[in-house]
Length: 308
Image (tube, rainbow, N blue to C red; front, side, top):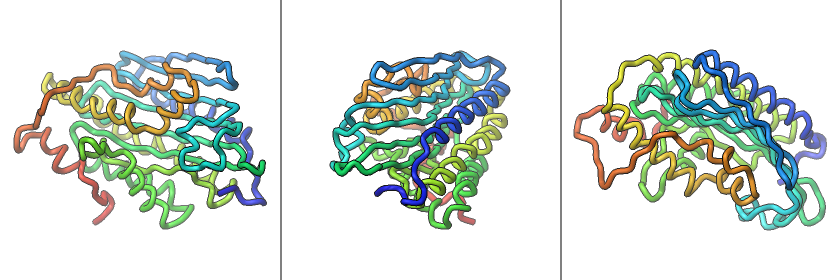
């Protein structure tokens, strides 16, 4: 698909908004954590660069990053053109903000959010562009009100752009953030979309902006409510075990990670999403009736969180 003729893509406007979004999110997270984020600006030899904003060993956030990148290339890598052979090998431009927050407290969920814009040309030299993005929540000890709030905020961000979008993007998220080798969801989902340009540039961009700007509304109330919950070694141990699922997904299935590594991206920034402390165990299972078992029984199975 290409963009509607009456609304040509405007990469400069998207870039300016992404930089503002990164700054707004970092400021809000710094206010909650109390520790300043590191700022690391970088350039890419093949074209473009980015700004990594990272905090490690914070007061609330054990490890978290909010990255902006704007990269250009001469030939599309396989991960980006596998499903679009008509654009394979052509020059391309990609920009986005991607974040992952791993709180220290096991009762505060990990969160991921990403908004991005991609443009290239097809074999006829015509512009081809799309938006992608979404956000998803990965609790270790689930709280139903938190999960409902997160999904409701995602729903409300999409509602002005079509009544069918939330249901479609929620299902896409459920299917995407799924560990096939475990037959298990990574978390409780949210929304996910990619290759989106059906509404033309202006409306597709506005929808992506709505998603990006909904992140703080979706996550900050949860983080503030859970960051001081008492916990012990048992909860930290389970958190580390479940974080292993996060690593498995990102290294095996995540398209953004694969695209970044295949396109010669900056490894430190690409792997920023990795949690700082992780454990794996052989054939471990939670005790029946335990809070850990409740995650598997009550939260990981796909469901409509907004149903009455």
